[in-house]
Image (cartoon, rainbow, N blue to C red; front, side):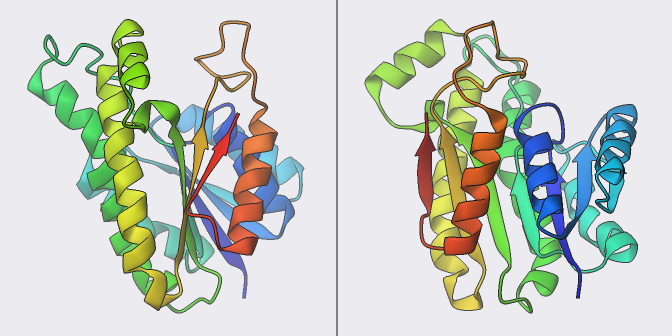
Length: 229
């Protein structure tokens, strides 16, 4: 049976590298993001590599839209084996000035929409011995005074809060889903990834390095959190 990976938050950088890596290993790829044109280009690029792919436009700050993904992917590509969550929202940079909607948006992408996608896909995943939830996170999510100071300095307070919630969620889900045979792992990116919106010319991490680590974690199924720097 063909395996399918749902790549949530598709764009340049890590998600492209993940789609290419898992596709090269025999996975079909479901690409999810808001921008339909970006998704179409991504599908075309994967198909040029002989990888079967399909696009699923969705706003991942909307948990209902996230929950609707699994049946659409299942109909087009078959059961979901892996969910890879790169999606994030960099809103509410100043938590004291941000409106409530912005705060809710960053938390929704990091937690409630992730959960909605997972819940909808679990009937597929629980029946497969190599099912997994793979999460890309950032070092802003750690509980550390110096990290908090940097998040305030870089006007990324909302992102830091969301990353911390996502980091806790990974730990909880890793225990909750262990008995169901669903592996949960998190790549904690401790730097800037080349070719992304965060790259100001001094990025120190290659997206393929992150994708390769996620693949290794997926195969080994032992590490819950791995730092990449």
